[in-house]
Image (cartoon, rainbow, N blue to C red; front, side, top):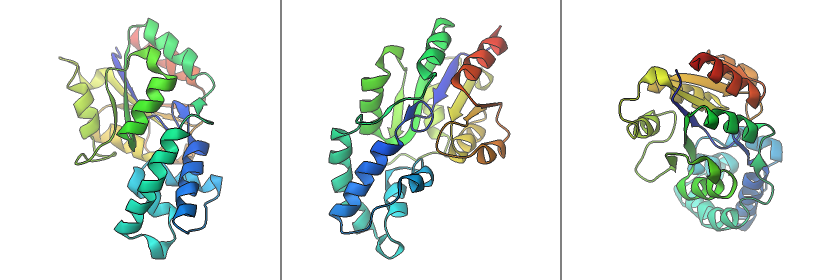
Length: 221
């Protein structure tokens, strides 16, 4: 029986790519660097804010100082424009409604910086009562380190690994679930490819959100 589903956020529950790209391109402009094409952000997101900046910056400009300068422009801009174009993927709300009625607990484990993660969940997904909303935090390892999963699981006394699923759209998410010793669901509507996800042999490779709710409900019967 599944009791807890931990979700990635960007590319899994919410289509955030355009707002992230707009904010990062704004930061690049402010720092005097060329912008990146929208399609490039499929591979740039998902590994934490600092890796986003390092990937977006020209190779010769990827110093720690440049990364921090990017952050100083990105965060205020993104926080102000965080929901300009961002919305749940088609079918996400219906999927969460079905799973919530089954009594399944939800949590978020993201590599998005903590403040941005909290803002988005509050604006777009607050009705679901996620037990923990965790993003990238100072002095905490980012995914695929399993600490973020273990921290969430520790909030549910007696929870067993076989009762937990981690759901995400990237190789980092699949590695995170494997490192934590729990089932994984890879979603193909996000930022990465089916082939990337399949390489990690997920418990489920979902083409549509309704496949997740159907598989979890069936497994828990």
